[in-house]
Length: 138
Image (cartoon, rainbow, N blue to C red; front, side, top):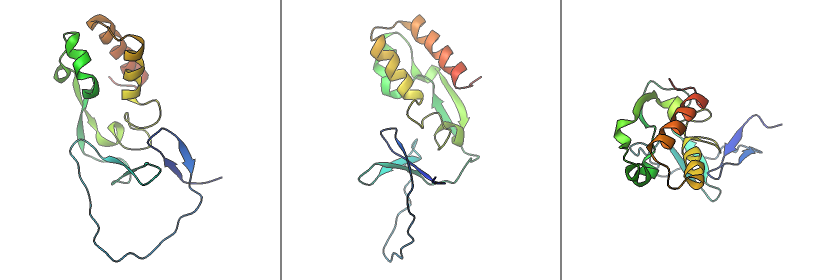
């Protein structure tokens, strides 16, 4: 049984079969993209990040994700009115961040809008409340 696992962008988790250390003599770059600390790289879109565990960095979490901003606006809700500060590890970093894993925060919202494409503010806020409970947010 593998001690290490690779998290793929499509939600699969695969065991790491071998780790090879290879010398590399060329330029390398440490990327930082505002609001994103995880990147999908390579042919298999393996998720990687540039920290090694919890951090003291605080991120602003949009409880109503930007990805669905048009749907929230159509229901009369402004996403900036529903933000909370979160420690980066709990927000975006593997293994336990809200935005990691196959059933992450945004995936939950996608399922909601697939089922209720014309949801009004009451349904949206009820779902937000249930998500906050499910993810342990106060």
